[in-house]
Length: 78
Image (cartoon, rainbow, N blue to C red):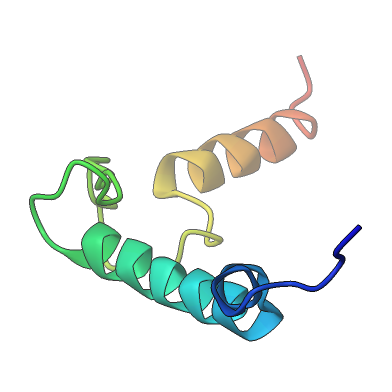
């Protein structure tokens, strides 16, 4: 029984060859996905922009008015 590996089989089974192919494959996938108009490109979010220049964490004017109306309503003597 001959257990020696030929040069062609060594090249196909080489860890270095496998990792090199994996690296080139990953780089190619990134390049294709980054290309505009590619079917693999990320889908852009078409969400509407924020209504104003303020922070998203700042309360809206309507919320502030409703809060103070409710707070002042507690003091009414009805």
